Length: 182
Image (cartoon, rainbow, N blue to C red; front, side):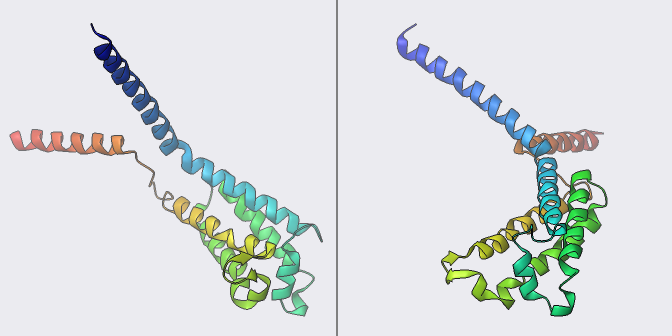
């Protein structure tokens, strides 16, 4: 056996090993990724919501107050905080997800409203440099996207790897062949 064929065999074996590891990791991610996403979004909502329940603790409080009429000043921040904590616990437990996602999207409409109603607080230099408040608001696009992905799984949808999909196609084609043969 010459050195080129040895190196080729070694490279082939290494490729097979790496492919197997890659497939295993991708399968694991497909199986558990949504759960991790759901729980992490839940933790964020509980954390940010809990801060709103403590007067002066939330960095979003001045922005919320700037958007609300004076008569709501005393109670709106804790109400938003309680709603966010409820959303967070819903995501963490995985219970009542349809309602939680609807509540989340409703809450996000309010959270994104500073972009329309107080845009001067969002930008240092439009459209390139966000203020800290602007960054706080724009990160909500990620939470909206996460809610949409989680929502796609509420009725049993899930991430399927290409290998799993091909296995199903092959199995269904085999079943059709057996049925047609009879």
